[in-house]
Amino acid sequence: MSEQDDKLYAMRHSLAHIMATAIQHLWPETKFGVGPVVEGGFYYDVDLGPNVKISDADFEKIEAEMQKAIKGDMPFERFEKPVDDAIKWAQEAGQPYKEELLNDLKRAGTTIAKDLNTAELGTITEGDAAVENVSFYKDGDFTDLCRGPHVESTGKVGAFKLMRIAGAYWRGNEKNAQMQRIYGVAFATDKELRQHLAMLEEAKKRDHRKLGQELDLFVFSDLVGSGLPIFTPRGTVLRDELATFSNQLRQRYDFQKVWTPHITKKDLYEKSGHWAKFGDELFLVKSQETSDELVMKPMNCPHHTRIYASQPRSYRDLPLRLLETTTDYRDEKTGELGGLNRVRSLTQDDSHVFCRKDQIETEINQLLACANELYSTVGMNLRVRLSYRDDTDAYLGDKELWVSAQEQLKNAVISNQLNYFEQDGEAAFYGPKIDFMATDAIGREHQVATVQLDFVQPERFELEYTAEDGSAQQPVMIHCALLGSIERFLSVYIEHTAGKFPIWTAPEQIRFITVNQEQTTVDFAAGIVKRAKDLGLRVSIDNSNESVGKKIRDAEVWKVPYTVVIGEKEISTNRLTPRIRKDMDVIAAHPELNFDEFLGTVANEAKARVTQSSL
Ligand SMILES: [Zn+2]
Ligand SMILES: [Zn+2]
Image (cartoon, rainbow, N blue to C red):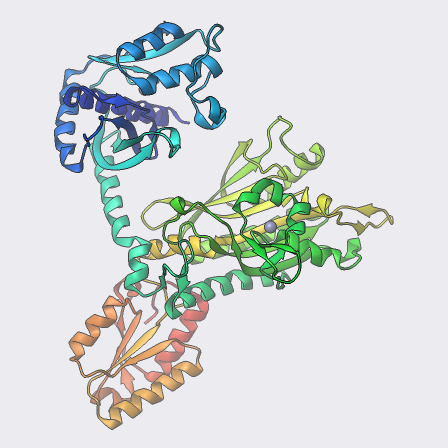
């Protein structure tokens, strides 16, 4: 973290304490949980006792009380207590949650629930302690068990705003008490805070769940189940166009399409190791005839190894490049599902390369070129993280191979001129990887595609090729999905474009609007629509008995890129002036053109996947 990040972190964490200070003043019986820093701000978990709840309506009051503490500019004082004294403090102060954390600190030296044995959480130990002293911070009359860091005094915290309240179980366990989690956003300056709030406002307007409904892209049904989106005709156009592009990019490099079934004997995943690791996330399927235990496939790699292994391979046959856009199924916790972000049926634009160790760099190079072109076409900036191993023994495979592979990844990233950073300890246990982060139109960064090397699957499946010297060698596997999951990518893409899809992905590219319902008009429009369809364009015709103004507004609501009015003048001259959706309209003067010129230009724009109109 940079110095600035450190400072902002301390500001945000200090604000969590200040909010707790204010809440303690307003509700003296409050029992406090934890108050960490999160992206964009902070929160604190509080328990006001039975029947007392904070609501949004209290924010003003809490903020005013916080401002008092900030004006008071009280120092954050750090002091330490022996752990047993600290436990006594929590008991006397009536803070049972802090007492539980202190018991964990004493017993295990940490309070992080996931690092602790669940059965032991919060239990008491007599005698020897894992830590001697624990640190506290005090501002005014509020004291908190805390590691810090904090700003010097309450006056130095920048700008903030309380945002929302959520329910949160103590330590994330639904058997525990439910607390209220109060969120705030915070920035170093007023200006940054205002920008962030404006971004959140814009994000709300672009929410893909809202746009998905307004633009008729996908639906959910109780009869189908949560996390299982159903795509309408319009939404399916988006899926297909994105997947086709992603495939075409790789087909340039001789990737070949394959097809694998959606259910599979569990034996395949036992052999791959996925069963042991992700067994509880798999959907189970039973045959009514045989005793076969089947699963819905959670990933496609093991199937693709079966294609590799179906023939003897020589060094001359490699690389073997397989491509498959297919849906996988994972039993995600229903509480974590939301829109297309996280689903139980996820479609990957998946690919696997089986290659020799000396071919890694070239293969990665090609995949990065694909990713570069895809993300620049959709108008998102890419940044990549090179995720390497560290010196622990948490990684499988030969260490020398790791070092050489990491070097090849880095070379490929540099030769593709990608903005990158390196991080040790972020690799998968089976190989180093490249994670792609894409920045959307309102400045949010999303993790999208990955390219992963794998030294372990080829070993588990005993894959081999015959080397030049006749010896049997193991290939390396490269996993890559350019979009990642199409559903998740769509959740990003719909918000990135705000539903104003460019010509190539727009479900409806041109809408023709008739001025009247006379036979000559209707016939003329039908002729144009036929020519448009011959060019592969997605067009529609609005021949309803409404005013032209109403029909134009309707096309705007559907965010149709081009709208063309067909009346007497257009019919007699065979010429038109299209209405162009504002975000695509970049040329000052729009020349009139004939129908064939217009349709031909739009077809070319779709093919070139441009975002702006040339008309
Ligand atoms: Zn603290
Ligand atoms: Zn894979």
